[in-house]
Length: 91
Image 1: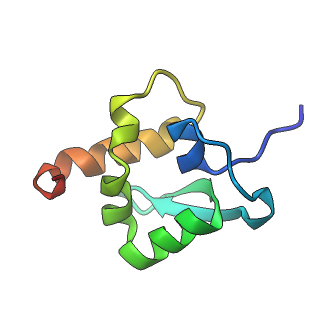
Image 2: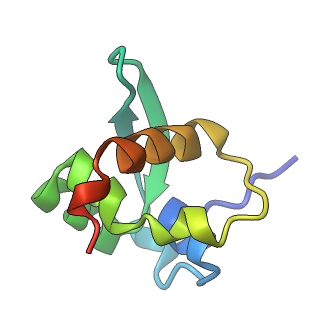
């Protein structure tokens, strides 16, 4: 089975990844320090680098509001825990 590679963030917003040649494998880390692999487009990889994991996840909390199903449950669980722990940072 050939897995279709696309940006994790773009995919959850329902947007096509603009330039698939710029996809990067990144790691987010859960509370125990275990890596959670994600694929990000250049734009979102730069955003993650500039803002850090916590602010990056919080800035995309809308993904949780509109979610129906996903094949990336570890990413979503990490995002949900981060957002719940930092509700005061959401404007």
